[in-house]
Structures are given as C-alpha cells and as structure tokens.
Length: 495
Figure 1 (cartoon, rainbow, N blue to C red):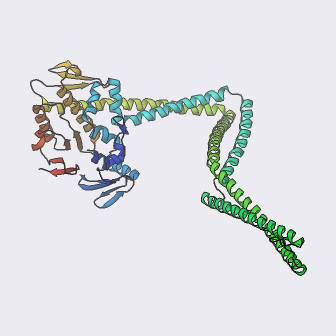
Figure 2 (cartoon, rainbow, N blue to C red; figure 1 turned 120 degrees about the horizontal axis):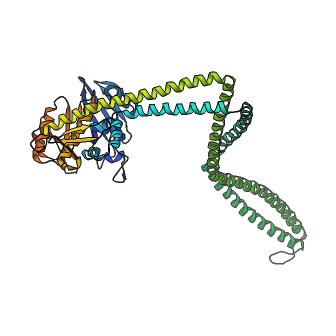
Figure 3 (cartoon, rainbow, N blue to C red; figure 1 turned 90 degrees about the vertical axis):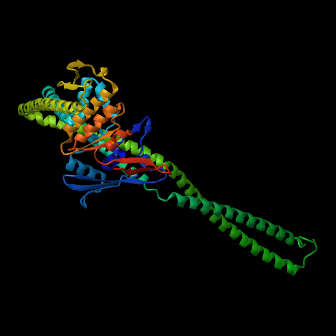
C-alpha cells in the first residue's frame, strides 16, 4: 500500500511523524540496502502507464506506452492531476487511508465532519477564494477611510519625509552590500596563509640561530685580535714575531669586517621574515573572525532591506492617496462599485457551496446506503441520513439510533460505507479504491458479506490488504506477502 502511494506521490503521501518519531523516506528502503525503487504499471482509459520512483533522491519517471510524460517530481505531479484528477491529499484521504482513521469521522461533531468532508472534496479552495474577496473588501474600505479622513498637506509632508528615509536607507543597504562583497572575498585561502605562517616561523627561527652563531664567531675573533695585538699567542702566551703579528692582525680585521657584514644581512633578512610571519598571522586571525563579521553584515543587510521594503510600501500608499485626493469622488465611486461586486461574488460563492453541499450530501447518503444494503439481515438493516450541515443519523429497524449504540463491526461497516460514498463522489475518472484491514472488528459472517460486496463492485478495481483467509477465494488475483530467510518481504501470486 505504501509502495503504491510512494510511486505516485513520493514522500508527501507519508505523515511527517508517526508515534512521535520522524518518518524519513530512507526508512522505506529494504533493510541492508542503500537505496530502492518502486516500479508501478497501471492501465487507465485503455492505455498503459508506468511510473518508477527511486529513493533516496526522489528521482521519478512517468511514461504512457513508452512516451515520457514527466521526469521531475513537479511535472509528474502535474501530469497525474491533469490525466487522472488525482493528487496526494485526495489519494491519502479517500482512495487510501487506514480504516481506524476513517472511523474517527463517525465520532466527530457535525461541524468537524463538514470541514473534513469539504476539505476532502476540494471545498477548501472555494472557502479560500471567498476569504480573499472578503480581505479585498476590507482593504478597499480602509482605503476609502484614509482618503476621506486624511489631510492633503499631511500626506504631502509624509511623502517628503518617507522619501528622504528611503534614500538614506538605500545608501545604508548599498554600503552593506559593498562591505559584504569585500568581506566575502578573502585575499588568500586559509591553507595558503597557514603555509606562509609555517614558512615564516621556520625562516625566523633559522635566521635567529644563524645570527647567534655569527655573533659568537665575531666575539671569538675580536678576542683573538685583542690578544695578538699584545704580541703574545692567545693560547700558549709565547711572544709572536713582529711580521707574523702584522699578518694575523690584517687577516683577523678582514674576517671581523666580513662577519659584521654577514650579521647586518642576517638582521635585515630576519626583519623581513618576521614581518612576513606577522602579516600572515594577522591575516589568518582576521580570517577566523571574517565568518562572524559576514554573519553580522548579512543580518544587518536583511533587517535594513526589510525596513526599506516597508518604507517603499508606505511611500507607494501615500503617493496613491495623494493622487486619489485630486479625483476623490471618482475614486470613491469606483471603489464602491468594486466592493459591491466583491460582496455579490462572496454571496454567489456561498450559494454555490450550499447547493454543492446539498447535492453532495444526497449523493453521499445514497452511496452509503447502497454499500450498507449488502449487509442487511434481521439484526442489521441500517441506513444513514445526513442533513445539510453533515449531522449523521443512523436509522436502524426504522428507528433513529445513536452511532455509539452500534457494535464495533457495525461501526466498521458504516465507516467503510462512508468511505465508499466519498469515493463515489470524488472518483470521477478514477476507478480504484484501496482497503487496509477493513475487517478488523468483523466476524466471519460479515467478512463473507464484505467479500460478496467487493465481488459485486465490478466497475471498480478493489485492492484489499487483510490477514483473514475468508478473502482467499474472492474474485480477482490474490497475492501473499511472506518473509524470506533474510527477513525480506516477498510477494507471491497464489491465484
């Protein structure tokens, strides 16, 4: 049953929650599999249709005798409505719903029942149209009040004031959009900045170590030069010949000068490396807060755009009001004519709803009585009487009987009959109805009668899901759902 609903309408046929738990489309995939699909073939009007829907992903394809009618959820939904007059709400509430769900209609009050039935059969659209007309009348009435009670000078002042606010707000929005564009485009990627930081740190540490070693070598050579100038060997303290002394002093001066130059170069390299490292670190830290700044700017932009929209709406309203002042009488006359038309339109819709409800009530009553006549015996000869406000009255043994006096099986039969009556009204071009455990509270005798009733509904396709073996010899094909050794459901044709 769920597979048929999913093939036709996807996840919209399932409730969002069941027994407090969220219903996810992934839950219908067979255990142990990552994905699944339903392949449904059906015949309508002498033509064969096929629909395949996959999950997860909701990929779908609807074809008619090889011709593709739709390959997206929206197009397929439109094709089902156009070709069969069927949508997911009508399917779930009339053609397939759990029997216990439909029994609740028997326990509801007439007003709840009227709302429920009108919703099933599309009356909600008429109500929405009527309410839209009423809101339009209210808006026109408010507008007349504004142009008749307002002061022209006040309106002109308001227009000038609001126009100034609009210009200021447009500048604020423009500045925010520019800041957002700037913030949304970082100069460097985060990974590049991290690489620069690591490289800069290694260079700084290497140059510090190199500078320290060079400075140590410089100090060592200065100490040797100082000792040699005394004329004695810095190691053994023996006198040094004059010519050797002069040679050593010259060599040490050259070496010291070279070390000084090297230290100067290292110092410059260190300063540059340290600056690069600091720049990369600052940009990285700025990047960490960029997302937060962007979020704040986006929120400010959203708020100011909303305020700008409201200001423009007010400006448009007062500009229209100002124009209306110039030709007030003609404007009021035209508005009153529109109000009169809308009032008459509302009355026409309500009259149409009343006539449609009366016609539908009689059709529903006839459909219910026809179905329940299949179960007539000495103990159960019920008929249903429905008033124009959807009050239900059961006539049992030619006397009114409250619904709560009926047995569980009798209420099941009545609920099935109401379901059948609704189906006959709503079906139009659709000729199938699905029943999920319709015999939950019935005894074997009523099971047999229900099977006979289904057998006589030969102009409809009946699909029944049941655990009762009384239906094994019903007309049509029978399937058995079984679990295999892997606990996967399999479908076996038995007749």
